[in-house]
Image (cartoon, rainbow, N blue to C red; front, side, top):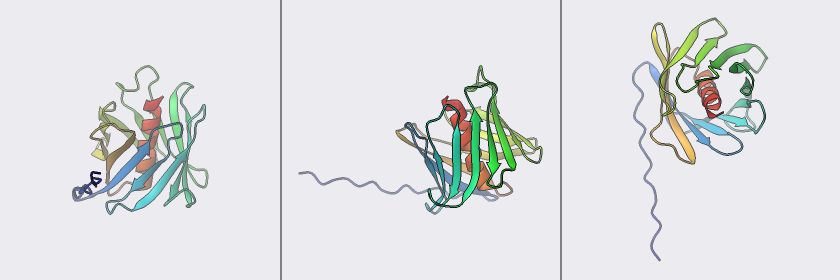
Length: 178
């Protein structure tokens, strides 16, 4: 019998100065649960969702039983396609909105609670995109290939909440999935 080959752990490149790096691992299936890892490969967040007519998820610290940070509720089958991200206390943190006719072609728009607007640039279909403001990019998402268990690298500017950034990236993926 041939010995089983083990995979070498991939080295994650260091984030550029002024940015922090996260890895979002998604398992495709009926549920869209995913985990978010920091640069040291430690799980920092867990996004738990289920199969609903409307997109619905919770972002928790560490694992399924951790402290609830954000609740995401969407209107994907309705018009307009949008997911609202609320903090644990119920206040609106962000709104992610895509055009119904062409979500892969038109930019997805994000409006934060303070009125700041972000917009996607790049290829949403290939999961190689950035969220930009008038000042420049604030979040960059990169994925090498699509597999059963996807993982993509998220680069987040230091002045952006990484938990909110992960929730926004999950919301964009959810809007594009439907």
